[in-house]
Length: 475
Image (cartoon, rainbow, N blue to C red; front, side):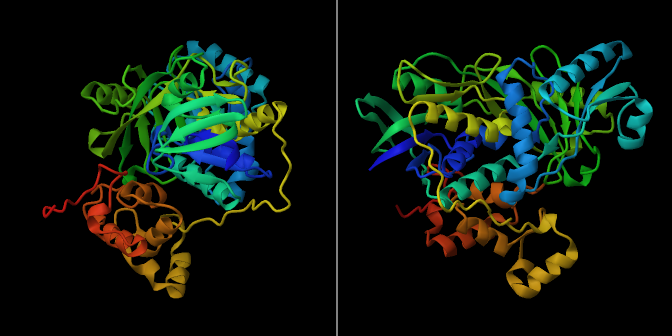
């Protein structure tokens, strides 16, 4: 089969593009090198839905961020059953002499169309953020910012795209992209796929994929960010996402309210030559704690329950979203770092437009399944709703993960929606995400995966081949 479009990479950008193209009468293939979508750059995202501030009005990322924010708030969150919390953002200053910088950020945001921006004083902050330290003097309030689960955003987009006819191939690392007179030949996971167009959304490896296709026009320089997840008992330490005044190179160390309850602090921002460098460091922890405590002194190292690092696919100051005229049919979607999660829905619309300009017919389907039912998460529903669920299906009362209140039925539902690994279950349900890190629930999840997938226990892995937990010593 010759596809109309092959999308390389099932992170947030590739997933959004797949869902957007699934509106049309097209044959679309989504390739992912990992065992599941969202296992690359997207899995380490902070989950912030930015408003569009802190981006120059002349930048592509600024305009795409504002439009992506609108699309998510007004359409996608409801259509895809996503838990989006519009908690707002504060950009704080420690010296009133920096107020002109806040005025500048406010003016740039307003030029991009961000609404409701307001400079607020310490009295306003005391009433709404009582845990802020005495060094904080004032802030820019940004009401349209919010938080979401980055993994579940990706999964929702992919599930809906597949529901609308997109084919997903995981564990399919691209090893060759060849331009042919009739289109492209893509070798991935030992198979050969053909298409008229290729969209390169390969994250950290987008430069390598582009070079394979004959367009070595940019270089990805990974930027590592270390982040630290706090215990859920600190859920209400902050009511907004809290930023310091940004520097020229970084948005700084943040206090991040998350959609799942656990606050996060971080990230650092340091270039690394290694695209697999996900190590956390003592220096990174010290930097994050110092930055976060300046805004909120009550934060304690003992609050931290998990350390992790992510790599941002940096390439210059702006996104790279363009058709490569030297390789007709190739669209690069690269350098998608912050605010990439927010911008993804708008990026998808832009990419569809680029493909249309190059001759891809975008004929709407007679029936596009726009809606996706919202999965049940007991930690997000009131007790009376939990009681109704248990009455209807007792397996909702069989709690597998006590730390995060995840039931056996939620794990089964996650597997039926596509989870094939322990991390896939974790990202969809939060089981294994608590302070015990799966110490109590992992064996139960393995058992449920065996039952649902018919796998031997030795085939159940954390994140794909090579990460199996149980070895058969007889072999």
